[in-house]
Image (cartoon, rainbow, N blue to C red; front, top):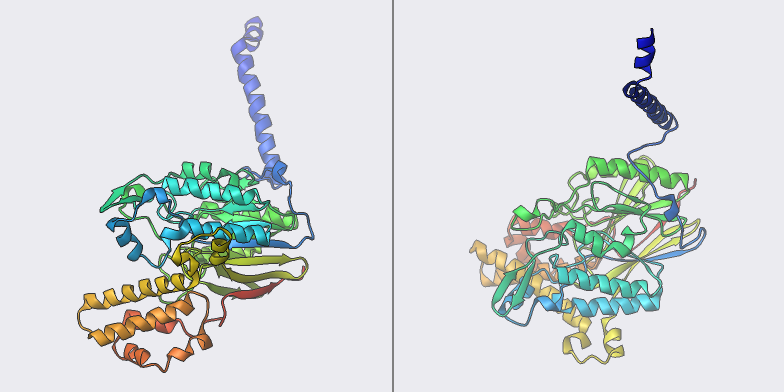
Length: 467
């Protein structure tokens, strides 16, 4: 008996018994958390719920997408950059500095509450371009504007990052995921009330009434072993679970959520949508609808377009804002009007006003609207002319007629105009040649521009649902 008492009082036995008590306490707490509905997977920083915009106030959001900033430190006016610029899709890469500075002046004059940039902040993820973009965003924040960003498919681990000097294209390093987070930490990440563990997504609360679900839809994990950046996007199942928790938390706080991501949620073109629409879009649509998310702000496709998807009495709108640094060089203005809903329109950057203000002599900038339009038209014309030339079965007249028709239509299409705005081209000789001679891929693309959901994709009003 004495030996038994001595054994039970030994330090090792007491330690085992203490550990068992501790385990029982932990188990009890876990059961209690489960029964009370607490989820240990997701956390929300309640201390960050210090809203800058109080409930009941009208809110103005400026939305820019795909600025594709390219630092002037990465190129000079040699053959290499000339080829790169003129083989592109119409982005004015040699004027991104000027367009962004003109846009900043519009922000100063327009005094929005919030600026959202939905990805592709840089041309090809060059570190210098990112650092300069961050400096420009700091200037905007000093104007009293809250800034929120997410990455696009061009921004992280991009194998296309280059310097263009003389005749040479020199490969340079792009930034990592961790570097993106550090560089843009002041623009959403530091004030996030929740961060997704599996991506660069975060939940921000700039106002009491409207929260922002900033979603990282880019796929860059394998870019280091590729010779081109992954163009497509997706949202993982784990991130979707986090989105549900964010939506539930917003409902508990009587807040509406706007989702922002780089890739399209819905198809904006029935022919050209692969790698533009996120791969698991039906899954994401289902989660958004069940979570009460009605608006997704997107970019990537460089097309000004608004699509909607309805199931039963629930509707979701995908508003794609076109590329800031390509014609028509516009951005979105979203207004939240309490008890009424959301109003969206577009506005074109008034580069000439900035040029005049700063006494800049550059002849292209002094005639910017025409220069940008002509540049975009020429890139479009050359793209389709080169495609037809490769096929080697068309006459010069056919190639010119087809390329001109597509270029003319693209000016209106990418600006957000459809249907009756385009019908004047139907009776032209060039359009008839296109219908008779163009290969199916081009013909199908042209016909997809007509009979859109909307005639003018530059405006929409989304009424607030009754509670």
